[in-house]
Length: 256
Image (tube, rainbow, N blue to C red; front, side):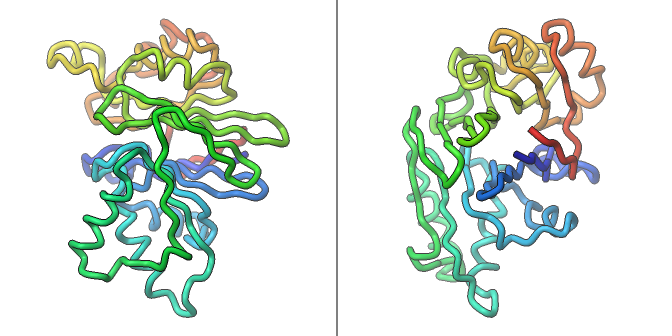
């Protein structure tokens, strides 16, 4: 599988870091993990067409993780010749209502035929066959609907975990158990989280603890706020995790 970091940032505008989105490509399947603002533009910068997308996996409904769904649907609706390949939107309970609210606000401009846009709401622990990939959902600690995703390639058995936004919890450890690559958010320094009483995001130390306990083979840190970029992320993470650590950068490409 190939992992392409389209956005490694947050909702804070930073020139070098777009909002969250990660492209996962296998021989047969292409899926997006979240689709924050700027996702399609980032694909364009790499010479990748939106037409390759088969699945979009939404971890939760915050705008920095979902806003480009509006742009994508508007593009699909108005592409000439009309786009014919269906896309499946995988998300937590409430995804159908979330999309319906967007379509109502945009008064039909982003409405697609059910033949072109399929909605699949996942439970807190669900599995789906997505061509040659298995996509499993796990509950995580952020907002009520939040889920993370575990992606397994059927042929080679390679696996990726994606936390979305989360705090430390048993489910995110289980999500990351023995994966080839754990993609974990890394929002703020631990002192920032502690001072503000935030337990719904991770620090570099938290991500290291999760990856070490889960025995993940490699760790990719993403969703980086400016406060986190001012510290030595690697040093803090390596206090706990002894494996390979990668700090995400926009347009980075990795093989799993």
